[in-house]
Image (cartoon, rainbow, N blue to C red; front, side, top):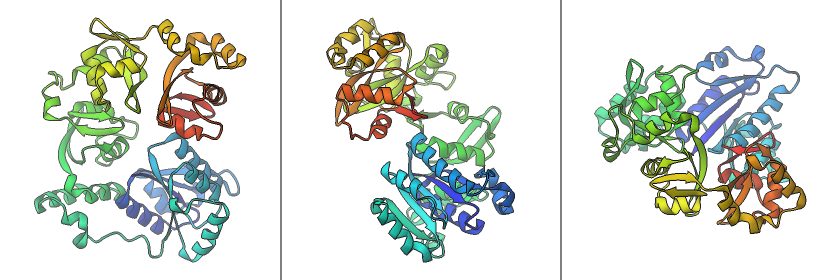
Length: 424
């Protein structure tokens, strides 16, 4: 599970905060650690940690740290759907609205604070009707221990001692969150060489690692800089990126790579970069977002589907996904043909909605939206206002009035920011 840690730096000592980071980096895959507080009053130990963690300076008046922290939690919930756990390190109680929002969006929240106040904290959680199953209260005086190396069950299941010694050596100078990520998964760690330009370096690697954790590893090993992307390293190092996770190629996949070390799908997309769009494709009950070029060869599109985790037969995927197969190539389906499928449903739209779509017809596309295991073809404009799109979904009876709209849209690969809906 991916976790995001928030530290109320004006309320918690660095020693406690860093111990919490180490503890939860051991328990979860920590993507980001935010240290929040007025920079002028922060402990030097917090400032020294800026190379590993993100310092959020909020020198904007009284209680600005509390407001800033609540805002950052809300942003994480809506902008980072992969984050499943929110860890809040603070003994303050001004964050209840953010905690309630997180649990309503089905995120687990771990509150690390002084256990002396947990009784009152539990009462507040009850008063706000916050789901107790999604809350964990940790006493920072007693609850931040991690297993010792000698008795650690991870080490008992690890590979031979030589492997473990090499892992300890490689991880010796890494930050606690990165080091604990690999030590916890010692039995699954492989050692690979990654390339960035003329630089070649050996690092620990876990197949299927989240791309944010992999990027942090590259930063910690100084293979890339803060402003660099992991994409080039992935491309140069015989690795592949699938659904925000990094994998090694299988032997079968390696046999398909060309002389440049890239697969035909990557080469095709690079050669047609200016024409690449993203499309939603349907496979069974799942919706996937994949790169697409109008007129792409069917065998290349089949590789892209496989790389994106779409396991269905290409013919059925094409048939269900507003695409058309002609002469061994895949095209966007003709707009008139798509309209013939959806016109009966559009008759249920209100006059105002029809007028809006007509006025913006050049930007309208039809996307699949799955709700309650049923997939609907829905008119959509990338960048449209949330209220308009929700109205369309209600009028087409895709969702009911009390449906968790934001959750449904995210499950279908859509992003909501500042009340604007767009493709992720």
